[in-house]
Figure 1 (cartoon, one colour):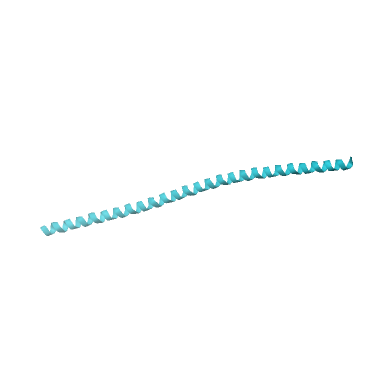
Figure 2 (cartoon, rainbow, N blue to C red; figure 1 turned 45 degrees about the vertical axis):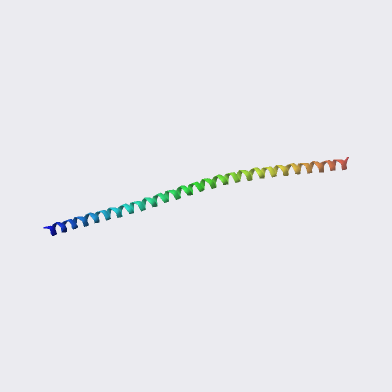
Length: 96
């Protein structure tokens, strides 16, 4: 009787062990999948943040470039106007 009880106990113990092993395997796979999903989500957020920063720095660069270009154009127009006025004065003096 003791052998039968022992054999029955071993069978039940094995069944519980296999069941726990299958559950542990499922849990590990779920954890791995959740980790992958989280990493993908973090990567997407990181890329979105980089895109935002790049967009912002590009806008700032374009604004600065436009401002500097307008300043240069304004200075060039002023210089050209001064030169033109000077030439007009020279011509006026010659024709006078």
